Amino acid sequence: MKLEQVLPMLRDGKTITRTKPYNDNSTILFVKIEESKLNFKNGVYLLKNDPHHRKLAYTDTLNLEAEDIFFCLPGLLETRDTFIPLFESSNSNSNIRVLSIDYCGRGDSDSLHFGTNYSMSRYMYDIEDFLKDYVLEKHKNKDARLHLIGTSMGGVLAIYLIEKFNHEIFSVLLNDIGLKIEWAALSKLNKSIDSSAIEIATAKIHSRVIAEVKSPSHFDLPYQFDLIGINLSDLVKSYEGRIVLLHNTSSLMCPSEIAEFSQRKFKNLEIKTIESEGHPVAWSPQITEWVYSNLVFNKTVAQ
Image (cartoon, rainbow, N blue to C red; front, side):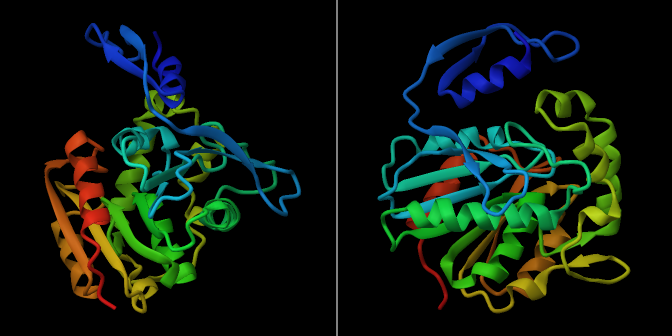
């Protein structure tokens, strides 16, 4: 079975067990498919005021009375499938609502029409619409705490959401992205995109996305910068909630010195270091358990 056939089954709540090793090109899986008790909805959201009536694909556990809402933002070329471990871990807890989306041109969301470029301001526009009109408006428990979980670029977008929503956001977890992004790391990331063609193809990423994310115009949100890189620390200077930074020791985007810089710039930032390499941190069962126990049960926030 091809990998692209497995991913929709995971979204539909089936449990996949690998029964044989991967073959040489790592694109075929031998699996056993079982029904799962996962309880979540896959749907599409019609964006407001979009001239082409675009739709965003989302996954939602639909616990509308939950005390804690976790809105998960994928990385640059990821889809909401990357958060399946977080959905699985939350399944037995009715006090947690977990949501994620596919950005435009990824997964099951609509692609942009020609003439409109893929950019971070476009993702922000879509996310704000979805967050306000679907996530918060439809949630019945108006006292619920909103947590953002952002992987790589999703973490950068979460930082910009802090500036816009501020007091509405209880905590933010950044997966392998800090408050500074070095130019050298961005250059290496762009090169790695070219070497990940198979993985990108199986994740259903539009070909125009792959080309445009490497353009300097893709990061079109305002930011401060110097010779080393982009500095995002000013965006969180008035935030009084928690920021938790999860990173690998030998990370491409967030090595230890970037984590330490981030902590110096934001007094409420907590660091969770994983003794591993690569980017980002993988959502292992141990990590997902730590995420919920840390963000839900450890609710101390400096006010």
